[in-house]
Image (tube, rainbow, N blue to C red):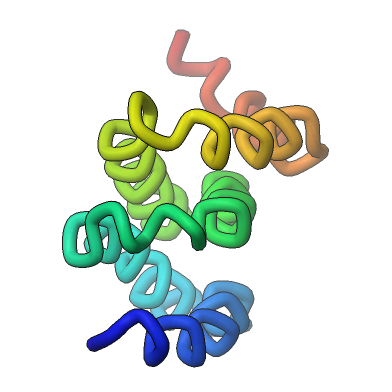
Length: 112
């Protein structure tokens, strides 16, 4: 799948991560775990749009969606933290100051 095709598909993938169906949300969140590896540096321009979607998945009410969002976020950070800081950090900072981030971190507190 080429970069142009990915650009056309991303809006539909984003919408599917907000589906009422938790299995659909989980399935489409999984895409973000593998796209960074599949596209490598060509995926970097999509980080400002993808990172907020993945962070929102961390606050999902369904544990399976949160787990896959965590795996996707780890893959994204590990792959781009050194090469694409300028694209990666702004959406991470914004996402971490949002209400959904506070909900996610509150769910982790019982495990501390």
